Image 1 (cartoon, helix red, strand yellow):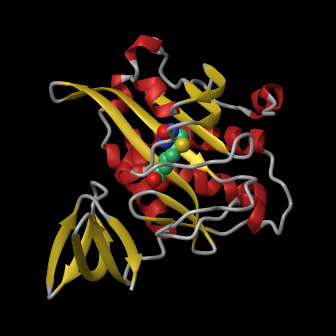
Image 2 (cartoon, rainbow, N blue to C red):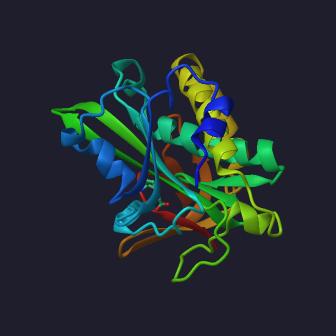
Length: 258
Ligand code: BTN
C-alpha cells in the first residue's frame, strides 16, 4: 500500500503533485488525465494508480506493471507558461528527473536512451509517454506518463530491451515508492522551471547521461531501419544520425546499439 503521508512529507514542490490523486485501478493514468469528463484541470496534478488495465507504452505497445509494486503515474501540465516550451525538452526533463532521483536515493548509476528511456546496467528501469490534446495548433493539455519498475522482481514477455527494477539492481533490497515519487516530482519541478531560462543546461545534463552519443546505432521506426553514428541531439531534442557522411534528423524511432 502506498503511504500518502510519507509521500507528502517528502514532497517539496510548489505545484507539481500538490493536487494528488491516488487510485487503486484505472485503464491508464494518461487516459484518465486526458479525458475531459474527469475534469482535472489543476496544473501539476499527479495521478498514481496501483494497477493499470490498459497501460500505454510508446509505439502502441502495452505497459505491463505488477500491482502495488511499482510506480505508474501521470503529471498534468496545462499552464501556457510551461506549454510554450519545446515538448522534446519537457520529455528530457522527465527522464532526467527519474534518473537523478534513482541516483540520489539509491546510488545506482543510470543512463538515458533517446528519446526517453531510463536505464540501469543497460537495462530499462523506466519508460515515459507524453500525450497531449490540442486545439488547432495549440497544445491545451500535456500529460507526462511515467512507468518505473521499483519492486517487481520478474518480468514476462519479449522485450526489445531487457527490463529491470530498482529492487533487482539493489540485489533484492526493496525500494520505497513514496520517497522515489516525491524525489522525482521535486526534481521535475526544478527542471521545468529551469527550462524557461536555461534550456541549454537541461539539454547538456541530458546529453551527459546519454551514453550512446558517438556510438554506432540502429534506428527502427516500424518497418524502416536506419544505421549510422549517433552524432548528437540538436537544440530541439531530435537525434542527429550520421550515415555516409550526411546528417539526418530523426524524429521518432527505437534506438539500439550495434
Ligand atoms: C514506454 O513505452 O517506454 C513508455 C511507457 C509509459 C508507461 C506509463 S505508466 C503511467 C502512464 N500511463 C500509461 O498508460 N502509460 C504511462
